[in-house]
View 1: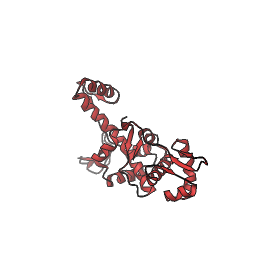
View 2: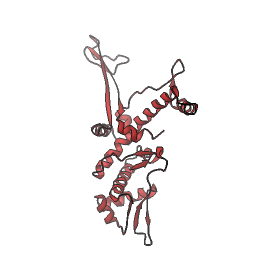
View 3: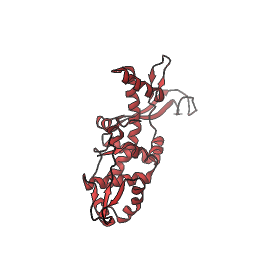
View 4: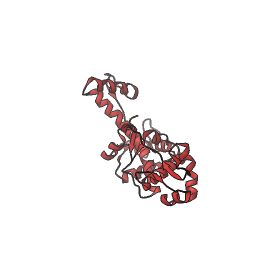
Length: 249
């Protein structure tokens, strides 16, 4: 199953719409390739999705507002989930590898993938820098150079560079629309699924007698040590690279 990139990116910072889309994705998975329910009612839709009728009533207006569903048939009793993927492949994210065992698992999976899109965009910038440095032909070089001029920096020698300073839990929470504690759980969920690897950056220097004083360039100090703490950096798994890396910026 694939979902349009713009649908996913528009969910950033919007918890309510994220739940609505997650429920629809789960319902689409349950209904199969035809994505429709004939002679449907709210009760029948709720039964297929394994949720309450009130939950369907809650998110139904969001589905119609986003243009993701419609009623068809002579009596308007056929519930149809409209196409959620684009015809052009690079405009989609592949979500076939997420956990479809329950609505809750789909919700957690989409939240994690939303966080991983941040890293995927960083990986795309790195790939375009490599392409601009070693292109296969002039057209590829021209395209990569145009992209790098907008999204990459240059060093003193004029070479394109991109510094990955990591992603803090605070930033993840802001992007996904949750608090820092929930952002940490989202990252842990993605790591447990094998979608990414985390590298922490916690360095210390022996500074005898510093005694908790503030030292420029250090996050905090203790009796005899100064500590530098920076945001975690992440590496996407090969499977997640294939799912998200073609989703260009």
